[in-house]
Image (spheres, rainbow, N blue to C red):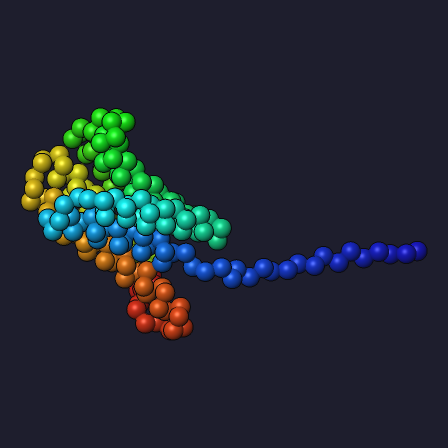
Length: 199
C-alpha cells in the first residue's frame, strides 16, 4: 500500500517596502503650515497655496494612503487618503466659483464643512491613543484647528482666524516633526527624534 504524504510548505513574505507615513505627514504638515501662515496674516491666498494643496497636500497624501493600504494599515489609509481629498476639496471650494462652476459656499456651509472635518479628526484622534504621543499631538492640534476655523468663519472674527493661523502653524510643524523623526530614526537606526510611543 502506497501512502502519499502531502507536505504543506508555508512561506512568510517579508515586507520590504518603504514606510509611506513620512510622505503623508510631510504633505499634510508643510501644506498646513503654508496655508496657516496666510491665515495668520503673513501673505495673501495665492497660487502657491493652491498648488501645494493640489499636489503635496492632496496627491502626495493620497499616494501615501494607497501605500498604507498595501501595508494593511487601515488607520494610515483612512487618514492620508481622507486628508489628501480634504486638500483637493478645499482647493475646489476656492477655485470652482472663480471658474463659474458653482456658487461660492455660504458662511453656514463653510462652518458645516469645517465642523464635519473636526468631528472626523476627533474620531481619528481616538485611534492615536494606541500609537504615539507625537501623532496624538498632531491630531489633537488639528481638532482644535478645525473648530477654531469654524468659529472664525461663523463669527467672522479676524482675531479668531488669526489665532487659528498660529495654532495651525504649530499643528503643521508637529506633523513635520513626526515625519522627520521616522525618516531620521530609520536612516540612523536609532532614536534621533523621539516619537514617544505609548507604553
